[in-house]
Image (tube, rainbow, N blue to C red):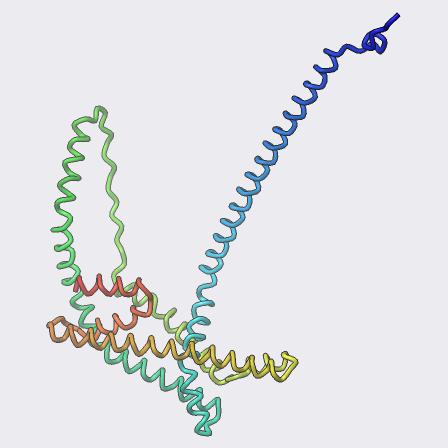
Length: 299
């Protein structure tokens, strides 16, 4: 008598197939769930990384803002050190001691700046006396340009008033009185004087120290060949930066002289003052040129 294997074992083939398909569906669901979890985890990690980067950038800007009174003098001193270093090197080649050469270079630079300020003080005072009238003329010109915009604004307000059902009471205008230009200049004078003194002292010590940093760097390097290479690299960097700063300075001075001469021929008052302004602002790339163009157009 033949027996059915399914009956003998007590198993149903349909039930076995349904169990297999059910386990396959469950495995697919588990894979989909794992994929969603991984995707969500990646999104959370990306947002966390973006938030950390944003916080770091904000902290960096806050640090730079609060450390500006310290960082600005140090940065200016380093730049002036590279600008004036060739003069000190030239004097040391003439058998003048390093400290004395640095003092002579710094003193010469300070005297030149004081002389330039003395020459420009007269035109600056004259411009400050005429500044209210000049600002009034500029305001009149700007009003002429703003008149079409104000007409459109008034028409828009009239349309809004015509379509407004419940008109709210008009708020009272508050006028804030601003400090005058002279008060702003006088209030910033002590800080400018203090910063100038700090920068001058730092520049002198940097120039007087000479190659102290380079000598310390050489003592750390083991082989003589590497020492020579390090000295050559540092020398080349210093010479390139000094040459660049000297070139930019001479270029800006020449530009200021040309602008001053051109404004003098045209008949613009205080041409030396505007030429000095162009020379100083041109140190700032793009922003300085745009500012010069706007100011000279108004003048």
